[in-house]
Length: 155
Image (cartoon, one colour):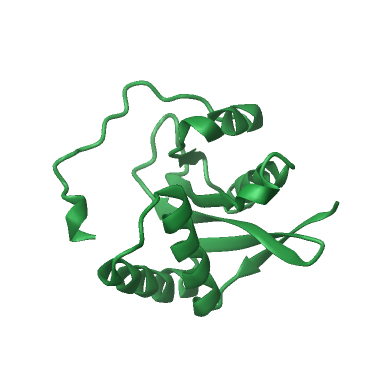
């Protein structure tokens, strides 16, 4: 079994996979408003290079996806360049999980982030995927908090 990775920029392909991720990872059908916002995001950030999206394939069949959102923050001791890569949309179809596809996707994205000069690479995870990320080299970050008064119903 050979796992291949290819970058994607075609809006219909990006939208198809984003919708599949939302439905299968979050267990909900995305609202029309959220899909419009995602389409606008892709139109802006694929073109300007702030979003790199990939598909993973096995024997010519697409089986998973992933992406990095690139940003910049004030340089600091733990991020001297100020360049950040947020890994997101990491997803492998259920029948292809536990075959190394997720590891291949994340490793590829981490390497691309490094090539782009990112000193800070981070992500959010589910409990089921935590060991995958730890095996690649991610560590828990105690002390991180997230403001919770944002209403998800606006999505």
